[in-house]
Every structure is written in structure tokens, then in C-alpha cells.
Length: 257
Image 1 (cartoon, rainbow, N blue to C red):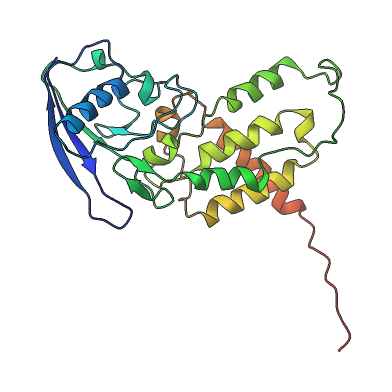
Image 2: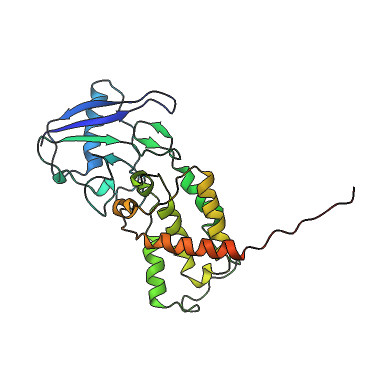
């Protein structure tokens, strides 16, 4: 296959970026999209040029780091796949492909196709966990969980934190990511004691990071490589409303002057 690539090149966060065009003449249909980029970078290095910077790790659709906008679609044209799971047989001989980084204020570009997605980590740090006493592991069957709840929790837990939902959303909202992390724990008994505090702190952090507000376009679930449903956002909104209505004001302490 012969492929023409238009790739976003940007030397650093404050540098001006532009699209550069490259032609590859011997692309195997069985290559993954990232393997095709490896071939491109080998040719650039051999020519004494700077290789294209892009994120990758597991290349098995698990780590979520292979963040690329391909022909305007997060992770490319195939539904339910990460970029590393996209193969060149999804394109035709002679195709032109435009590749850009995620575009969101909360995801500043570091270099070329690499963006800083640490904002998602800070949302998790704000409340995406449970508090548990240390000690010996409890028996796996000690806490009984109805199968529908376990299935819903596992569906939400499939989120790999890639940020495709943010990149696809016209508002650059992180609501699907945040809702998945909240719903994962909210369906389980272990997550109930901190359920409402969790939704308040994580949504607050999402706003602090500069993500846009959700207006239920639905682009997020279409772009999600794990096909997480937008229903998790509805659940997050319900929990947030309940938490807001039942939140007790913090006690104030007055000191005599």
C-alpha cells in the first residue's frame, strides 16, 4: 500500500505547530497504525530528521496512551478500538491520512502528537478510590454483590483513561471519563461510604482542570474504545444532585479577638 500522511509537528508546548506531509510506499495491510508510524520514524531517522513523537506503551488497547486524532476521529475510523488496535487494512491504497493530537485546553500539547493528560490523573486523585483498613485480605465471597451491579461496575471499570471522550466532545468535556470512574465504585458496596463525597470532589476537580461542560452530544460514547455508555453520565448527574442537596455545611469556628 502507498499512504500519504499529514502529521501535526510541534517542537514544544509554546512552539508553533504545522502539518507536515510524508509518503510511505510499502505499507503492509497487516501493520497496526503504530507500526506504520514506527516505519515512518525509521525513515526519518535514516534521513537525519527528527522522528515524530507519539505516546505508546502496551499496544494492546489497555494503557490508553496511543492518543491520536485520525482523519478527525479519535483513535481512527474503527469503533471500539484504540489507535494501537487499528490496522492499515482499514484504509485503501493511495489514501491520505491526517493525524493530529487531542485538542482540548486541559490537554496541552507537549510535542507533536503527545499531550499532557495528567488532568485525568488529578481527577482520580480527588476521589476515585475507596478507604479500607489495612490487614489481611478478606474472603472473596464475604461481600455478596448482585450480578447486575457487578456487571455494571465492570463495564464502567473498562475505561482506560485515554481521553478520546474529551477529544471527541465539542465541549472538551471529561464527563464520560469521570462518570465511569465514579460509577465503577458507586455500583459496589465498598464504594458506598464515600459515594457522595466522591462525586462532589471529582466533579469539582474536573471543573478546576478546565474541561468543558457536558451537553449530552453523545460523541464521547461513540469515540470510546471500550464502548462505555453515556448512561454513566446520567448516573453521575443524579449522584451529584443528591450529594449537593444533602451536603452539610462545614462547621465554623469563631475565635474571640
